[in-house]
Length: 307
Ligand code: 13P
Image (cartoon, rainbow, N blue to C red):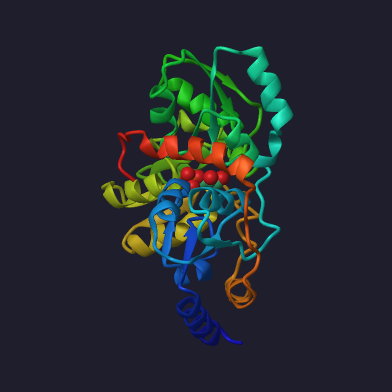
């Protein structure tokens, strides 16, 4: 099947199954092109909770499909490539978190949405990269165990007077960006502005003009007067950035900004997902219910920055 045939087949299958396609900003271009909605983790969570559809094809990684199911268990959640996981989410297990909670019994537990359903179930509240500061500052506790991303934890620590106790995980892709990359690109494009994701190392975020989730980066790029924008997040984000701003130029901070898991989905796998209703993602109720509480509590937190 060529691309046009695949597209037509997917459209017919979507109609037949009352399905929508949600795609993360890191998905390959062909997936973002046919998606009904694209967005960051926060936007996709909100959509999963509110959208009217019987089937959601979640093009992202495992924790995103799990979150969609936790928020909308009455819908069928399909993940086109079942192998698409998140090594950061896998860097913490329930035993590790329980041990940390015993060490700091007074602390609240905030888990980054890049975590398993089990970790969400053991946490007080979830956050995404777009609302981590607001979520932490919304808590009454003075101490916060922040899992599993140490870089996002460091970013939050700058904007709160609470004691942040980080887990030692990180995103292998964003963690590759170095201060030398920032200096190099700033030298090449002295009139450019630098926008990075908070999963980057703290020394990198400290050098940036703007730090935000992928949707916040997309918003910043639209609003800035700068014509050259240096981007410190996964390469897939360039699709929307270029589409929204044809008159601007975008430069990726590092060639290493490619998440292999996010690249696993494609149009052919979406067609198969809708043809065979595969791969259905579910979470048992004993985990789903406490995980829902953490995710839903996050959705109630007031945001300062609009996404
Ligand atoms: P956002 O979806 O919040 O931009 O974060 C990206 C991400 O989670 C990839 O690891």
